[in-house]
Amino acid sequence: MSASTVKSENTKTSPLKSQISMLLSGICMGVVGLFVSFLGHYHLSTVVLLRGIFGVFFLTLFMIKTHSFSREFFNESFRFHWKALIISGLIYPFVIYLYFLSITIYGYAIAAFLLYTSGVFVLLFIIITRMEKVSKINIVSFALAILGVGIIMEFWNSPPLSLSLMIGISSGIALSFFIFYKKIIYNKRKTLEQELKLKAKGDFDVFLAFFHALFLIFIFLPFGANDLPKLTYIEWMFAVLLGLIPTAFAFTLYNIGVKKDKGGNIIILSYAETVVATIITIIFLNVFSIYTIIGGVLIILANIIVLKYSGRKEN
Image 1: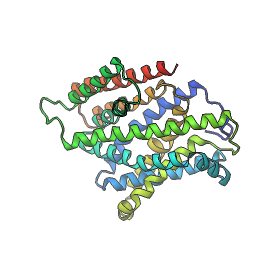
Image 2: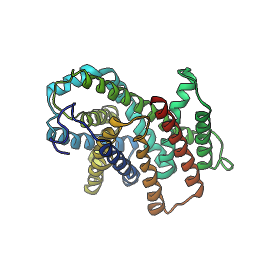
Image 3: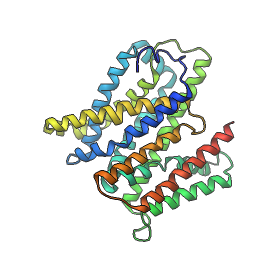
Image 4: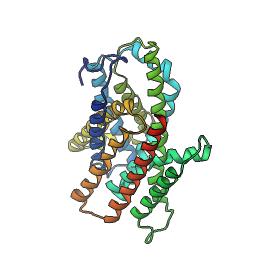
């Protein structure tokens, strides 16, 4: 990503670029389970901390390259978005920790599918708050998601609400809150662009990824710092790749996609993460379950129905 590509807030991002960015983001995020496994003998807090440290390192380089590491740009970004930035920053570490914990319990594929229950939880929030009337098609999509989770977990052999299942679903709930506040930020930023209130030069997509990665360090440094001197050279290499591929690259590409998303038409492409996670599960863990595939397809279908319906309502 060059400085000439995105140098100011008025730079336009084409829908095709956003779609490609979101697809690549999902692919990059899909390999995160491998790094969790490679570093799995350390506490999860340490793994999350390493993701934060090297994610911030590479994102700092990206910001320097795009001329975004300036006091003027930081001050402007905080002035307009400080509340949503702080709330989303506090939520994000829990998304990552719960997701990594789910990976250690269920493996890559199931954890990824449970994470992507986030889309239908937005519908649940609407029902609880009575924000708007919920259509029958949304009720159907919610039922599909619940059925999908049940099939993945093979409910006929497992207790319906185990602690481990709640951990996986909690990652999806946390992610739904995180995406919600990120959309608030981008919607407000779009209005500010139209009103020409943005003056500072900088790449806000990279800044947002950088800011959220910082919170991984703030929250988990007290818990994982003691393990850092124990890492071998090979483990440091895995930590560097963890910070680069499914973190710095993936976060930035995801933000580029979210910025142009309307009614979930681009966010849908992030579901490539579940496809990659499933393939990795089959190759590296030598595990294949038709129930995981069937249940995962139902969860993704439920998300697509919700997103497409909301898109039609917006139009």
